[in-house]
Length: 374
Image (cartoon, rainbow, N blue to C red; front, top):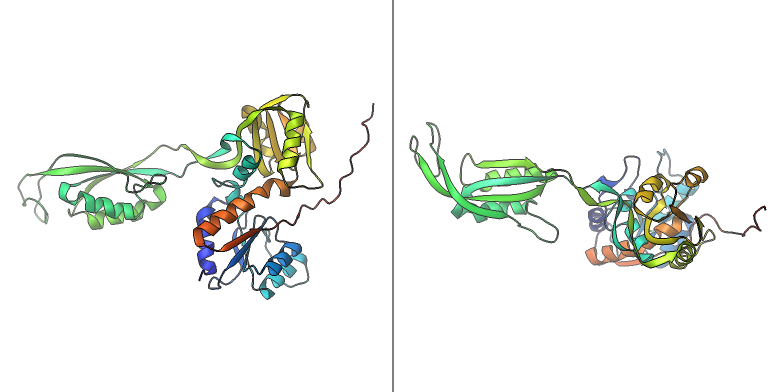
């Protein structure tokens, strides 16, 4: 039996709420943490048609990318669309969870899925964030106690590197000290010089885990006054960030890339429109799921073309020279992420997951115009 609290914990591990923008509203919106979850539906928008689909599918949880409430509210009465969504969720026994800007910057996240459906290779963040800050902890400990101390700090998160844990550098040397009156030395005696074969252990740890790791060190170390160093490591670029940039499998013209993008993304009335020379050759492509015109200058520095959504007239007309633009529907650029998120949640907690195919893009008609003025 899987509780909602377990599913929320798994989603928070995939898309930590601390990664969300300060203005965002992510996490559990509706639901009892003790409720049982068997089926989860993923969708972009928490709107009436999607909530109805969740009820039809018997979903116990709806996970959406867009928040239900971004601004504050004083009522969830069923007198407006958002209030009616809350009531329909509650009456159907369905919870609501939101992963928004925390999923945008995740690795993998929204733009990774977009890059994948477009076939990009060798991808990296378009606007990378700094990696989580790390410390290096250097511990001096009698050789016989080294494994015990290493196990203790590793249990609190030290020595974790990617898919490896308990990673450490170890060497040995000679430690020396003289206990003063009032000391209770584990080795040696008060007033005498002690010489001890000691191990030097070096491990890295998330800075956020520093206090917990040091408590574990002090509890496991045999000395009453352990010797250790804590070094703050330099900030480096991490794997998270907005957008992605990569290479196309083979160079194509902007016209062909526009066709390929329209075929790869889910169909919408908006489709995909492009700005630039239709015959220009594109080798590197930058993408950003959702609204991304604030990254135009960043994309221009690393790519031949940039695909995103909600491009505005003035930023687009003033885009850096040489950067082709592709503008797709907002919903369509974020929809590919749903399948990836659903698969990861199913693997993490073993619940049934499904992806909504309801097109919630607000634009429903598109009529091509005639020839432009001559």
